[in-house]
Length: 478
Image (cartoon, rainbow, N blue to C red; front, side, top):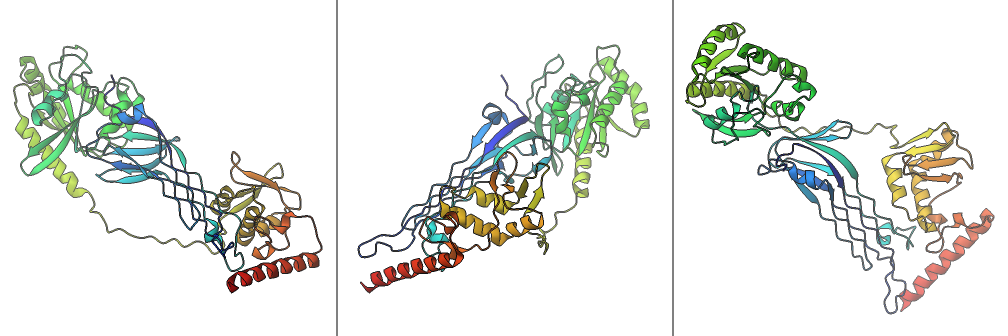
């Protein structure tokens, strides 16, 4: 049964925003008391948070689909909908978040570090929030925005100061068991270690963590054996300790060739050339092992390595090794740059940045892309003429119509707002004016009625406004 997982694909969905409410306050003697529709609640976010007590991604291997709750819709009487609850997913320290293409989105190191993997949708505004001096009684509300849908990859890279690397059965598990309180599986056959083991070592005033990385073999950097499954766990370590077997029973192997092969694999993996190395000649308690260690030690020291002869079984040479590793760890920690004070970088928007783009595609369709116009389209109830008219007003004020004209759009041309797989497409008709003054009865927009002379439209609108104002005056008289 799988007990350790360090790479999973996770499908997360944030909560949708609640719809706004279109409501009119009614009570005795005040049947038209004004709009009182509340706003919809915000959808919940999906948040990844580092928890030191979590050591594996196994939970998400079994349940890869996660969704936050939706926001509640608004109600009459100025009652806003309840916000959706955020979904907090705990991950191990050292988790890297990537997109499907392999681009790093976040590197979560340190207890409590968080990353919003999927943003909850905004709640729609109720008609009370949409009311203004020129639009006193809106007959519509805005819809809630759908939450983000994301497919992400989580990779765990062990956070440790020291990595023990070497061939299978070189004695790494035995070494970590005597240097620390870790109790990994130990046996006399290859690949007994199938997951990285962590241990804490105290040497004088220095306390450091040490990781037993599963055995590497030739071709590991290309995925052979356990290969890439665990080479990533070496990346965060500041010191590498080569554990070489001086008592191997394989005639074609020796400590020097083992070292060369492992170094080649580390080189092929990349990014580890600057880490200080220590060479440990293990199993000197075996007579042939001690003889071989004394034979190869001068060659290894000639290459510039610090060499230690140890026996995990007989507890020989362990104290000197632990203190030598502690010195390298302390040096590496001191060399790290100190954290700078948090800087706030202000990047003002360019004066010519409209916040959207208009592109004419090969088939003659004009496509509008931008955060605001795409969100406004998603918030519009296209079954309500007044809501559609409000969208037209917003797009016109943003400058979409003007930019379409500059791009060469003509009456009847197709215009799409949004990406290809989720766009609203309509035939464009340039308007001569847009604004709240175009609105008439609640839920309607004169721009969607049959064509009438401009003078007649103005007279009709003025008469309707006078009638509505007289009704309010009569009710106020009570």
